[in-house]
Image (cartoon, rainbow, N blue to C red; front, side, top):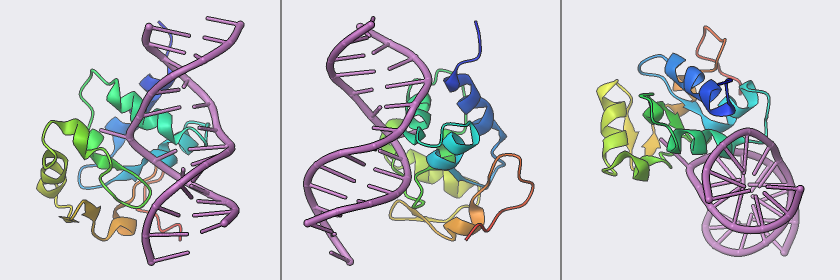
Length: 110
DNA sequence: TTTATGACTTTGC
DNA sequence: AGCAAAGCCATAA
């Protein structure tokens, strides 16, 4: 069975360092399909393996996927356990926490 | 093969 | 500023 788009998403997500986050769009862009941010989320939705999906949020730093963690507070709790401050589904200091594949540093692409 | 879907993103009003 | 609609594209059926 060849590697599917999903598998690559899993690989990237697994590489996200603890205490860091990234976005659907960044992952999609890294995988080559810059318009397929939706696929990333969907890949996680179909995910049967264990990946830190809670470290993936939308481009605003909003926990849009929280509903898929069983409890809507699960995702937030997981992030806070890693030292990430979340308030009202919004990650604080989001831009400083963004991690990008193949980048060793935290990035400040703005 | 065609259609539907979605844990997104961007643009336009 | 805030909401609506379209764009996006890999998978499942």
